[in-house]
Length: 467
Image (cartoon, rainbow, N blue to C red; front, side, top):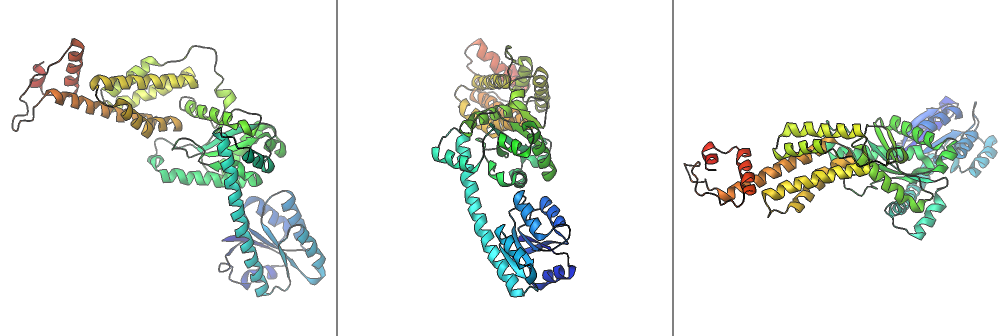
């Protein structure tokens, strides 16, 4: 339903207008009845309104002054209907020049009011449909540029509708989710939060709302909001870039009541090179998992890599790999905590993260290959990685890294059992401990590995003794 406010200093007229028709049946909700233009102005600043029905002559602020102020300060796109007596008709004519959609003569006739409401309902629906098409096209043009796809027609369209002067930054906005909360694994919950963020961003940005949109992430677990910032926003707000971003962060936090994270990408000269800024935000996402948590991350602060040798947490990673190999669930969690703590303490950078993760993946794949050189390790690793490991890194969650480690530990256990079953046939009914065949183990290294498998599989002493 469309939200309407009635503004008139004569209470009996305002209440009579409210009781004149069934507003809900006409598709409207009377959100407030206010006594003067100043009171209405404060309301419009705080809450969304679709239609304002206001008297012309009122104390403090007239209906005409209210209309002029709302339009001049771009406070709302709400439609205005002026209430006027015959002696005030010249004011109503002036109001029409400021974009007022219509006027009503006092005393208001029921059919006249219904006719205007029906007219505005149609205008509103058509306007919203056109706006949605325009916003969707602008978002498509911006997303194409984020991914490095240059379309001259799209760029021209964006330049005509948005001001990109003063430099451009890609900013990813997301809500921080506690890894200890089971609801964080519910996609519906994430999407609901994302919609809440988007609606609040649209309300804060006003006429610049086309700068934000959902689902700009290349990975499937993106629940953030994309925001294409330019220096023109700060200039129009009369503040610095840092102050604008901080103010936007505070307003959005108050509106949504969520704890937020802003990833502010590299500043580029024009919208045509915004893909460079987007790429730096992807690097920031990886980095955040191993840094002290902050509200706003700036590319220039976080990814200025010093000329030092790379940081490899080899000892801690080796301990984690051993815990995965032995499938020790509690120890896996402890080693992951130690890894995050060490990387935070040593101040790792983007390249360091890739180095450490590649080392972990290489060692784990090597373990699987030793157990079964016929298994399709690459395919399995890619599957597990896509399901949990990469997701954990993109969301900066220990929980998801632990999930990957746990699933890979189970995978190694399955390979170990498969290895043992090749050489043992102790399935004889009633006598499971009887050895039907002795393994033909080639090479000392293979036999050592085989003995380790036997010990870790907790097989009966009678079978172990054969070796």
